[in-house]
Length: 266
Length: 359
Image 1: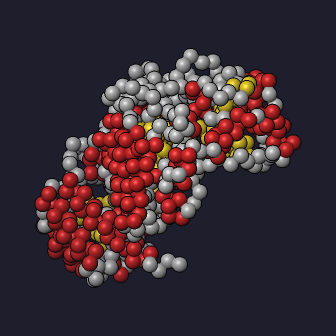
Image 2: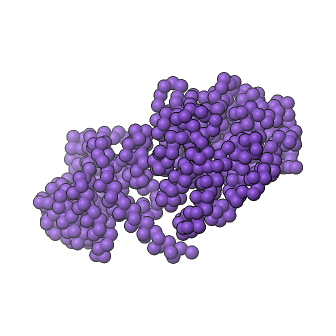
Image 3: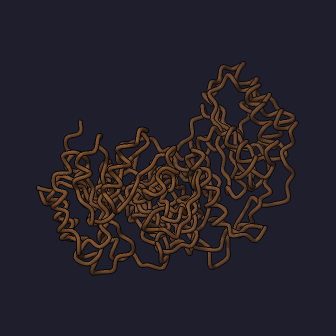
């Protein structure tokens, strides 16, 4: 099953598919949701916070709402205006990992919103800030919503499962498609240069083959099973040295949890 | 004596699409003829039915067993359905997987029921080459990923040579990342190239380095022979690998060459020794009664005095019979002994890590 993330202007062209509809205009989104009769609407994305929360409060049915903040350092204070939207719909704040992003994370979490971090190839300073957010997510007892990808990866490492970052981040080539404003179908907003045709995708298998056969950093990385080169885009030469420090903290946390719960196994 | 099971290693050919630098098998070869394959299946079926043998495993080996193509395996499927339907039957294969595509992929998948297939590659040294000039590693990994996609559990054999010692750690992590379910590390024998020649001491040292990284990873990947030794040390589980156990005479294993020649092990077929006879001239009653069928069991039951008095005999059982020197000890004795001594120290020094049950 593929889920297409489509701009509101193209929503009706994809009316027979499984879709997520996005728009910067909350009124437009509210109007589309109100008129949507099928059960193939998997959520809406509000792009930025220039619109009002009000139209989304009165939707006829609950629908997952993702608030996408491209320029969050200018906007995150406006999240407060959406504080009671969570009573009507599951809310997720989609935040880009840029300097200072942890403030936006804390505001979103304090409002009871889930968080999804959009991260590409962070430098050392950004990884340090991510570590700080990870520390907050792992040990701050008031955090009761998932902060992705930390949460999904922690569960995978705890379970020792092969769940991978592509899936956790809703960029799974076997599930997710992103339709650009011009109608081009790509994998995701983050990777809008990766054209992704319909049908069964071999993208991750092909990527595994490339990364292993080139015998680079990924081929012996202990996180490869859960990562599959997620951080190797757009620059394949990007070094994961600092990212691996972050992932190591998650791995140790997963291991610690497993040992704690393992004690109670019969 | 009626065996519990009769397992076959069938080599449809010893030709190969690869030309690995140290290969013992590669030589001009015919394909196992369809008549010969029919003979094998018919006789096995008749024997097991008449004698009440319930289980059998057929391991397709080579050369490259996919070389004979889809017609050969479509015939094997039909023959098994006709003659071996009464058996609890498992088919497995050892292949370089470089030919795993198209109709061969379909036929082999059907025969093996997408259960288990083994492959082999060397990620860091140019020991494995394809005759067509393509990159062996890439072609093999392509086949491996395709097999996994088809639902196969893929096992791996890695041949350890001298240069492997420098990359033991990387090898381990690379293999984990391919998603293989198990790795058998096999020491390179009889290869005099000084760059690759593996001494017994090298083998022991490699095992030690491999154990270290395996232990760091909480023993997560199934590694033979380390896992066999560890299971014996921790749980006193019998050692599964034929090299290091004492084979029961109730478990019969016969290797069939492309010419229909029969051997008690494919290693002897490689070396052309201890031939039992030819399937075209023997019944399975005759094969089962033939003394050479139990050659390995005989050797394992009659170890030399040095082995019997060795403190590590229960871990080694004199090793692979095909590697025995004139004294009856394995050529790897020195390396195994030093590794077992290391293992004994690990177990005694830190029983909580090396020798306690992992997850």
